Amino acid sequence: MAIRKVGVIGCGLMGHGIVQVAAQGGCDVVAVEADQAALDRGLGRIEKSLAKLAAKQVEKGKLAEDAAEAFVKETRGRITGSLERSAVADCDLVVEAIVEDLDAKKALFAELNGICKPETIFASNTSSFPIGEMGSASGRPQNMVGLHFFNPVQLMRLVEVVRTDDTSEESFAAARAFGEACGKTPVSCKDTPGFVVNRLLVPYMVQALMMLDRGDASKEDIDAAMQLGCGYPMGPITLTDYVGLDTTLSILKGWVDRYPDEPAFAIPRSLEEKVAAGKLGRKTGEGFYVWEGDKKR
Ligand code: 3HC
Image 1: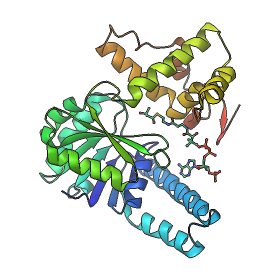
Image 2: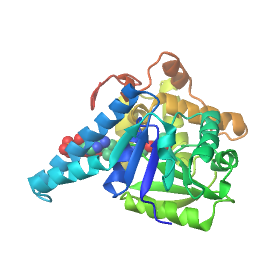
Image 3: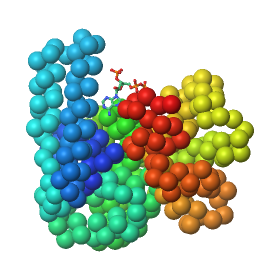
Image 4: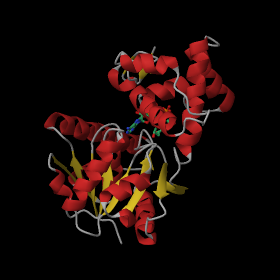
């Protein structure tokens, strides 16, 4: 089954990027948000990002200015916004990128089951929740996959494609092909906590925050150590600010509840305190660092 029309529910940090790469890949995309302000913010981010990508192509001599302008116009032209979930009824694929709350995701897929045509594939961009549980709630477990993109979606080249025991071969193949159309390299994952990347990445971020909590090293030194010593593009504390402290905490809370005997899953004190204080990272202007756009101090 070829994916031509895609619905994306949630146009926030991850959702707006998914909308954009799907449109860049040639799909018609419906972006659904709960209110007009959130939708406008998401579409505004897409416009900024497209302008940046186009300017870079021109700067590098890969595209002439008129071709870059056409790229922005055509991509933007494939995207429509809606405040109604019913707008995704005839989509071939619907990707969920709402808040990391399993009950909210299950309720969404149950609702979508009543809205979408029978062959629509459902995908969750969850970082950590079981895809199988969402599949059961959706009433069409054979059509359920995970499509886990990385932040910033426009630049990160990976997508994890998650299959459950119930996912049909056809749904899985279509989801992988969609990931490729979005310009990503797909990797296949089983429905395990954190799939591949977050199972490795989140415990590493936890260890860095615990190091900070113990006063073993400053945040700047921990970040510099991993950037310069291991060649990582960002240090782990900056990365936590980048991913969002609330998202990181909600991943960990879910894991600690479900897998209390797994020592790699633990909640650093500072993470809970910052989230309680509303310091959620780059998106709120402060997390472990204070942010002004891309600059931090
Ligand atoms: N759209 C278009 N262009 C963008 C952009 C966007 N959304 N974001 C950044 N850019 C541009 C920048 O403007 C910049 O352009 P310029 O060269 O013209 O100034 C260019 O991309 C490179 O950005 P930076 O100058 O900030 O330089 P970097 O080389 O540091 O690249 C990065 C930024 C790609 C974010 C890099 O730092 C990186 O790879 N960081 C690690 C990110 C990572 O690990 N992500 C995964 C997080 S885990 C996750 O998402 C899973 C979740 O479930 C928890």
